[in-house]
Image (cartoon, rainbow, N blue to C red; front, top):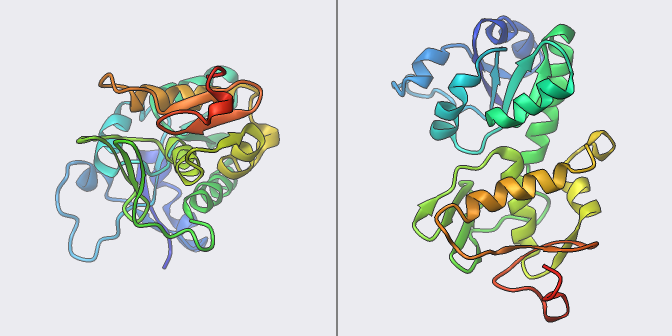
Length: 231
């Protein structure tokens, strides 16, 4: 089955034919889906959303509706300011409009591969304290509170949940959560750990995501004894 890609805005919708030729299922009727109307029986659920430049204002609504699926925001130039604006808007990544569909197709492959579970990793429920993650539905809850995570935040949490109680190194995180570690800024993990902590502790809950200085990160109700003074 081909991956369904929701296209938001004129520039994104102009790529529908190219995406279809490349094996994707473009969803052009973005207004119908965004409004919450029924798109018709058999309409696929999008696995990725591609937004035109200037569509930042729709990200919160898209995230509320579709949860932690990848949101790719179009930008005209690859600059530090544009990258920061992309992350601050709540998008997971950008695509360069100036490069046409080639850059977008590369990023779609990256994010769709990111979502695929590894062999033998089909869990019904992962839990640490009152934090629950259901991989089959990608639902995350802290107590009774549902968490809306970006695709990258979700991938990071999933990795840490699968290694709960263990220290996961930065190298392993870059290797498994970021497909191209060489292109990542030096502080990208710290940035996403901060985002994830803020969402995990938004209602004043106690800390579950711990930093082990010089080694990595650990998800657990407490650190392993030998690391307890390092968090």
